[in-house]
Image (cartoon, rainbow, N blue to C red; front, top):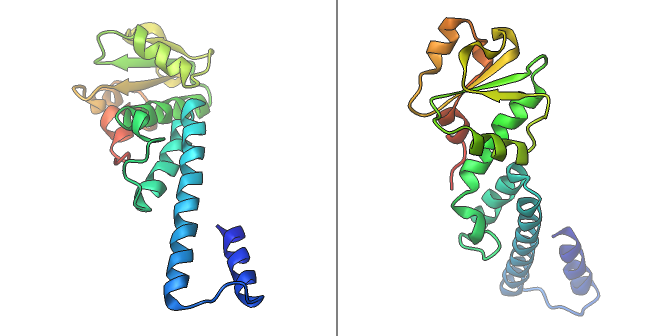
Length: 175
């Protein structure tokens, strides 16, 4: 946007554009629309590259700007909250020192979730399981479904900051 503002300013100073309150509003609106469309292109780039956290940040700015149903966002809109939540989990597990196991609690079918998490960047060093006794507590992160109680796993001795609840990961993603 700064480049367009500089161009308009230069045009006014050189006499090529007449600046009135109405023309200022018109040029400001043109800059806003241009900027939002550039953000939408960046959104599409990040979403296709499966960086849904960056895409979501752009999406919120685009929607705040008034383009609630931009065609670049539309194909991703329904699944974006889930992808952001899962990618947040992946990021947290990958960055936790000494974690080599992710226990999925309350999920019946873990193969699809495991594949999705790998696709979104879960480290190959992290084993995904649904069995409690597969790894020591101190090297295991836990992801509990909406129907499970994270406090149960904390009471068992799992580290509280490594027990992730589906609701906690998704509640900040507002579409």
